Amino acid sequence: MARIRCVEPGHLVLDACERPVAAPGEALVRIRRVGICGTDYHIVRGTQPYLSYPRVPGHELAGEIVAAGKGSVWNAGDRVCIMPYHSCGTCIACRNGKPNCCTAISVLGVHKDGGLAEYLAIDERYLIAAEGLSLDEIAMVEFLSIGCHAVRRAALQAGERALVVGAGPIGMAVAFFAARAGAQVTVLDGNATRVALCVDALGVTNGEVLGSDSAERLSALTGGDFFDCVFDATGNAAAIEAGFGYVAHGGRYVLVSIVTADIRFSDPEFHKREMTLLGSRNATHADFADVIEVLRGRAFPLDAVVSHTLPFADLPQAIGHLMTPDAGVIKALVVL
Image 1 (cartoon, rainbow, N blue to C red):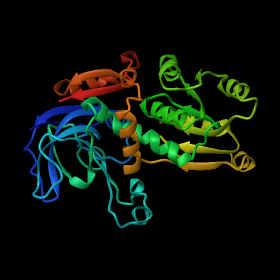
Image 2 (image 1 turned 60 degrees about the horizontal axis):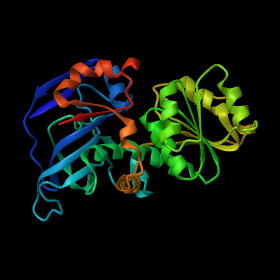
Image 3 (image 1 turned 30 degrees about the horizontal axis):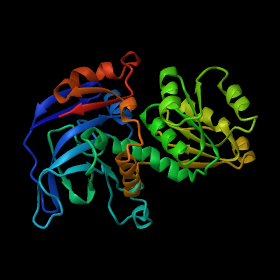
Image 4 (image 1 turned 135 degrees about the vertical axis):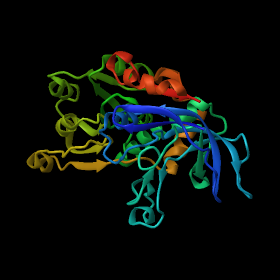
């Protein structure tokens, strides 16, 4: 079968390997769509903190069952979404119902080879029924679930003011679910086109383009109070540090993005505001289920977010261009 590997930073190759054989308890899945996300770009750049090379990326996956074992609930041809976060089931996080931050978590495309391949043998526990969804929609479930989980972590309430910093796909997912929770959502990003899309298509109340006076504008927008909840989805250490200043007294700050850096903040300011700092990692089966229902209801503007589609074999040559600002990529889908 064909696969795409990142053999070292900056170098994707299309090569061939043996088709996997499903072990007991696994199903063989034909991969049909792979969403390309910030994690994949970090892998290519060499800035993903949890990864070793070579690696087959790909964790936003839509597939079809080829074969499953005796007694399986799956049939050939069933469309499935694949949960890419594989947990141990026994650590403190798993025992407390938080397998998304398992101490021994293994994420497809990061800790082990992922779905940029024609076939994948996968433990049936990580297959999720996706009837009623198109293949493109199924490939959207994972990144939308990241946003859904972040909003769940924040316990966002209707009427609260929320600020989402960073309007990439994850930031858009956070903004969408924050607005769906009834919050008054503001998005801050340096890309005016993405900011406008958030306002026009995702239910965002206000859009602000990043500038030297951003703090002053955000203060004016909120009557000097700033925001009940701030979400960072930038993947930028300086932006994360600046975000502490946007949180209202008594507010929450949710770090959705991951950076390979130490984050510094003013302890007096942090305590003065009695701020709550939260990390949000991955997503749970409950988040996936919520997102699938949203997509079944056609509530998410898929066409506004999927900006590029390309054939599987073209990705190694195209990835460099996709990562440039001139490409105008929001979400790219690889078609197999």
